[in-house]
Amino acid sequence: MDSFSKVVAMVKEYCSGHPNISSIGFNRWINILEPVKLENSVAYLYTESEFSRTTTYDAYGEVLKEAFADVLGFEVEINILVKPGAEEEITEEKPKMPSISENGKKELTFDNFIRGKSNELAYAFCTAVAKVDGNENNDVFNPLFIYGDSGLGKTHLLKAIQYEVRRTKPDFNIIYITGEQFTNEYIKAVTEKNTAEFHDKFRKADFLLMDDVQFIAGKDSTQEEFFHTFNELYNRGRQIVLTSDIPPSKMTKLEERLQSRFVNGMQVDVVSPDFETRLAIIKRKAEDLNFNLHDSIIRYIAERIKTNIRQLEGAVKKMKALTVYTSESPSISMAQRIVKEIQIDNHPQEVTAERIINDIAAAFNVSAEDIRSKNRSAPISLARKVAIYVFREVKGMTYIEIGNVLNRDHSTMTTSYKDVAAMMKQKPELKNTIGDIIKNLRKD
Image (cartoon, rainbow, N blue to C red):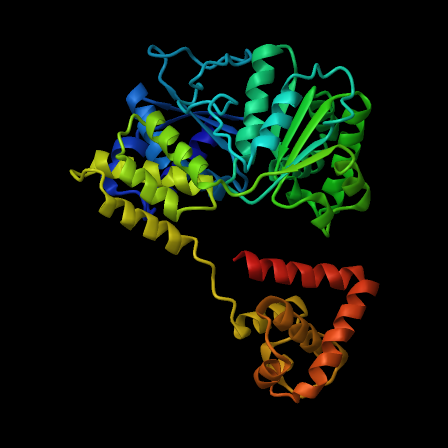
């Protein structure tokens, strides 16, 4: 308890200086939290009332997760409980599965998952998986691999499977974990020479649900461990469900033997929600918060936030917070301010020629000046050729434009581009490096 108390004290210190938490908000909602325990990547805290618990989640839940991750070095789930007397104390028994979870947040279930054309197939596959008995290998849906951009509902689907299986098969051992948490737990087990307990935890699961499995790509020892865990569960007929931001075929740093196993089951993608689905998501979130929003405000938000469900929900939560902590009523002007903030926060950084050169210089351990220079040493020459290739692939620049940026004769640009394309076919490591550079440029 003493060590966790110190962690919570550091978390409070982090929150006290956070730009999104006022001094009044900190003292009223954060500073009153009391440490209980940290267990299985869940931080348990006490607060004084049901209202305090719900308000703290709605207003500061994400900041608290951010603070714990900063202090501990890994992500945890936040579980805020009302002090004993108003609610039952924490026990070691399996949790009950009410519609509102013990942490005060609405359970992510199939019933409250908003379906649309963008996710209906993934929804159908996940409901099918939740019905399997876990004792026989399901050749069609094992493993089930769900992929798509962040904020489109992949985690909701995993949590819905977890909820449904716990409800219908309470004796099953269900493990939900992220790729990062799996990696951190494995490193800890190796460091503490306790890998037997680690194996026992994961290889005895009836359902293994792993979010963001792409995190293990490129981590050799973690991939090795997950490969054996996967094989053990699969051979015993246990269900495996994985999510990622990209399909297995595009995970360039994932071992081939894992890739082949991931694609051996069923793959399904989720894409950005259409307008009708966005409307439904906003309405559902407002209902969950007991927040009355006019249809014109709902339509305004749905028309302008198009690609991310979390942003849609975040806009509603922020409007609710503003109406609670200020005297302002929900309005189009309020929605305009909030949408603008979200769009500014998520506006892609401009991919300039300077940025491309700097990224390539860092990747190849040369300087930006080296790439622009006349130096023909092998490392610098390769970095310069890669810059030409990336300029063409990412910005679609003409060879004359590239020549002007690099202060070189454009007549040599075509040859350099073709040289890189040929080398990428022969050198997987170079292909992976360039692929990562391009992905980072397009993602930011």
